[in-house]
Length: 212
Ligand code: NI
Ligand code: MN
Image 1 (cartoon, rainbow, N blue to C red):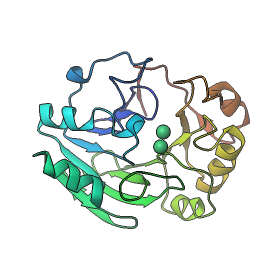
Image 2: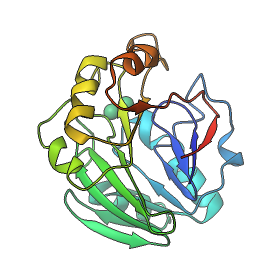
Image 3: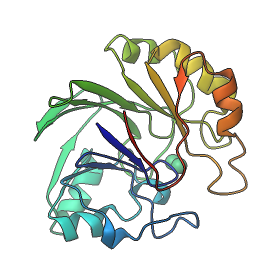
Image 4: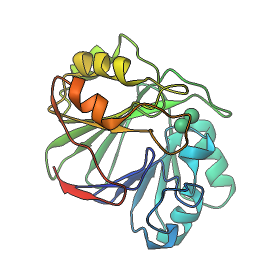
C-alpha cells in the first residue's frame, strides 16, 4: 500500500488524502493542483488540516469525508461530501472509514480521528488528527492497527512522550510521526520519537512515498 507524506498531518494513501494543508505550509513540496485523489478525509476545520481540501476536491471531483458540520459547509460550496460523527462508519470505494474521538478543539463540529480500513490491501491505518493522549486509544488499538499516524509536535497536540504512551495503548505494527517542525512552536522531533517508540517507526521526508 502506497503511503505518501505531504507534510504536517497530510498523507496520501493510495486514492485517499487526509488533512491537505499544502498551499499554506511553508515546507510543502507539492502544489495542490498536482494531487490526484478520490476521497479527502478532514479531521477538523483548523486551517492547518482543512487546508486546500475544498479546492482539491473540486479539481478531482473527490468526496470530502468530515464531521457533519464541516460536510454541510462543503456541500454549501457545491462539493460532494459525506458527513458523519464520532463512532460512525461509512464505506466508499476500497475503504471502510470510521470516525473516532480526538481531544482537541475546532470551530465547527467536533475534532476527530479516523480508522481507515483498506479492503484491497487488508490494512488498517489510524490517523489521530490533532489530539492529546487519551485512555480510549486502547479501544482504537483493539481494532488491530497496522499503521498509526500520530502527532508529536507538542503545544497544540501530544508531544513525544505522550505520543510514545499512545503507541503503547494503540499497539500498531508501525508508528509514523506527524504534526512537527512545520512551525517553530512544534518542537517535538521525529528522531526523539523514533528512539523512544516501542514499535517499528517510519519517519517520512516531506514528499516521500513508502510502500507499507
Ligand atoms: Ni487543530
Ligand atoms: Mn493542527
